Length: 219
Ligand SMILES: Cc1cc2nc3c(=O)[nH]c(=O)nc-3n(C[C@H](O)[C@H](O)[C@H](O)COP(=O)(O)OP(=O)(O)OC[C@H]3O[C@@H](n4cnc5c(N)ncnc54)[C@H](O)[C@@H]3O)c2cc1C
Image (tube, rainbow, N blue to C red; front, side, top):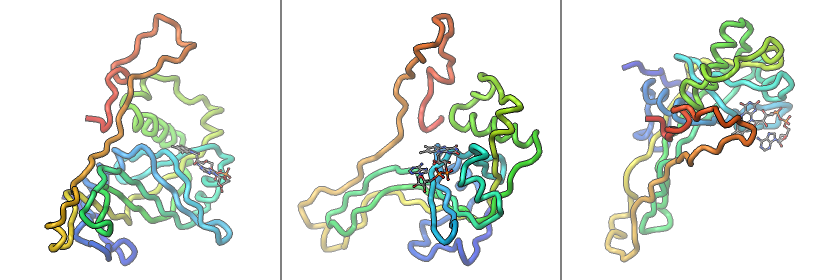
C-alpha cells in the first residue's frame, strides 16, 4: 500500500481518525469526482473556482482557455489548493448539533506547472475526456493544432495531499438516544438520466454503449 507522507499542512487535526493518506483511497476519490475546486490567491484576494480535472498516475491535470485568468495565474507557479468532495449522505441526528454529512474528500497542495510537451498535453486531453465518459477520447475528433494552442494544460503533482472520509450513522450524545426523534442517514448519489440526442445528430448514428449504459459512479 502506497502512502502519501503527511506534512504539517496536511495533518488532520479535527477528527484525525477520519483521515487517510492511502494513495489508493486518494486516487479513487479523485477519479470518481467529476469536478474539483481550485483555490489560489491573486493580488491578496483568494479565489476558488470549479473546474474539471483528470488524474494520470500521481499527477492531476486541469485545462482551459489560454485566456483563463485561473490558468494564467497558476502557471506562474504560485501556491494552489485543490479540493474534491463526494457527498454520500445526509446524517440526521437526534440533536440539531450532531447533524452531519457522509462524504469522501481530498485536498491537494502544491504548485502547478504548465504542460509544454505536445505528447503530454494530448495525453492530458484524453484523460480529461475519458475521466467524464470512459473511452470517449477514442469516439471523438481529437484536438486540432489550433485547439491545442488555444488550450492551456496545468499539471499538479499529487505529493502533498490528504483524504477525509465520514461514513455511518449519526453520533448522538448518549443521553439523547432515548429521545423520540427520528435519526439515521439519507443516502445521496449522483445519478445519470437517460441520454438526450443532439437534435442535429443524423438518424443513423447509434448511441454508443459508453453513453447508453452510463452510470454514476462508474462501476
Ligand atoms: C462544472 C464546471 C466545470 C468547469 N470546467 C472548466 C474547465 O475544465 N476548464 C476551465 O477553464 N473552466 C472550467 N469551468 C469554468 C471555471 O469555473 C471558470 O469560470 C473559468 O476557468 C474561467 O476562469 P477565470 O479565472 O478566467 O474567470 P474570470 O472570468 O476571469 O473570473 C472573473 C470573475 O467571474 C466570476 N466567475 C468566474 N468563474 C465562475 C464560476 N464558475 N462560477 C461563478 N462565478 C465565476 C467570479 O466572480 C470571478 O472572480 C468549469 C465550471 C464548472 C461549474
